[in-house]
Image 1 (tube, rainbow over the protein chains, first blue to last red):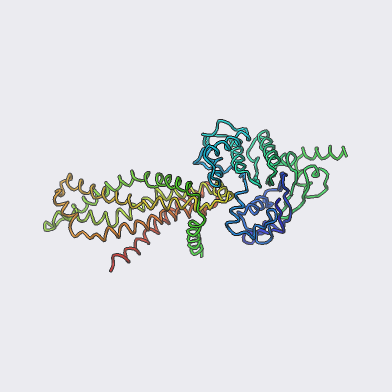
Image 2 (cartoon, chains in turn brown, orange):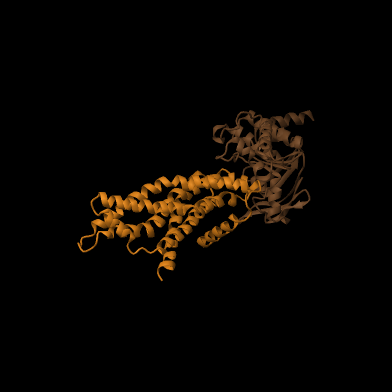
Length: 254
Length: 246
């Protein structure tokens, strides 16, 4: 569980996050949604410690990240897995080396044990026979899956995903969404996904946090989205005709 | 004000490089890779330039000796002094600022742009130690490159002098032994160590703290060459003043 309490983040004069408080539940896929520039990625970077908020506290279980020294923060980060928007795979390493990287850095396992775990997670993300290929030699969707494999290889307690579907076709995007949710449930981890993709919200949004202009505009589950009259949710979600029609059907059913 | 902030940020970076250390077995591999990338891969261009510039120094010296009273051994003497004192340590370092410096800045800058550095940080790895420390250690072998440059520069001078008909092997050999001050070698290698540190850290700083996209990586590489060269020239002046002027 991650609890965020009144965080503010400024860049110069501009305040990006304006006092956000929320909780990201364990064993669930928690989604942060909002328009471009609403502060989603800044919030994610505050959660993982890449940005330091000027005010407020972020608790991992009972421990505030602000009270941790550098070493404690590094130890906490060993329990995190992160899927970056572009994959962020290391160009100079092949797929096997990329996925093995966290194991090499933080465990004392033998190479055979590490290889076994690498093959296990690669097959979990439906990737086989790519071990010796380099990131540039595989497709964007495959890169995302390798990145997920790297994020979960060291059995993290927290998984963060920044726009996991960006640049992917709808079918691959759904595959990635489902994979993230399955991994979250299988390993009972706290997953936080930043997205503006409404399909993701409907597929895996067990908890949804809507940001608007750096403020928390609404929070609930994906099923509650169609029922709420919250103006910010309505204007964000129903900006497309398809979702307007879905809402009408849902309301008629009620 | 910006320059002061940049200088401060450079020294903070140096402090962080020696902060939390990467696992030893991983670091060892990285150091060997950097030795290959930064030292071994530079030997060809350094050898080529040293050999021919040594030859040109010898020919230029010979062509400017109009007075018949000046001994032919001066060609060897001038070649040795130019190569050991300035050409090998300083001008090879400027060339390396272009070759190695741009490589360091663009590789670290690309990692910044594609969030690979963020990935390292999120994993709890001290990215500065992981990326920059192996380069510093690899470039501590840089004096060997300069020793090779000195040898090939003088060899180039000797071959150009003798086969160009400007001097004889005996005169050239007498020239390179004439008034030899061993401290000049100490001075040359001392400043080479300083230049090696500059070559490893200034381009790393440029790449690590860059923001933007692919275009900015190119700009950072150009800035890296300019600033590394400027700092090497200034350091050269200060070290020469401190070690040779007394």
